[in-house]
Amino acid sequence: MDTVVLATGFRVTDNPAFGKITGRGGRSLAAAFGQTYLGTVVPGFPNYFQLSGANTGLGHSSIVFMIESQLRYVLDAVRAIDAAGGGPAEVRPQVAAAYNAELQRKLPDTVWGSGCASWYLDSEGRNVTLWPGFTFDLRRRTRRFRASDFILSGAASRPSRPPAGAQQR
Image (cartoon, rainbow, N blue to C red; front, side, top):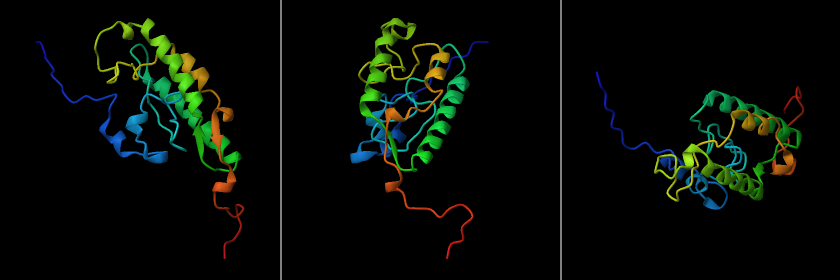
């Protein structure tokens, strides 16, 4: 028995929900898609973390491994942000730009960069969907949160909290 599946509306690079999420200056997440750092954080979106973001999709391994790597990174980030005073944290735009330039340099050498049109490509023809390397490379990159890659605002932007166990009046 043969089965033919016709599907329309599968939108990976232009998720309609991303147009409703805005960061600094009113910029939408849709406009920033493909500019993530480690597929996890986006410049202009302080304290925004995502899993399975841009360039974390796979055609050769398990996405679970990628998600676990990102999750470990997010937990380390939350600890580091809290230790720095808990203020907003935002990836430095130049860090994200350099990271994405590196990915875009690697992608043409992959099977995904063969020149065919596909849903992996955005409206500009960039592959912002797939990871261009080994999964263990993303695991290595997400092993530790690097505060130097971020603008950390510290406690000045957070209301003070009473010490644990203190009674509030």
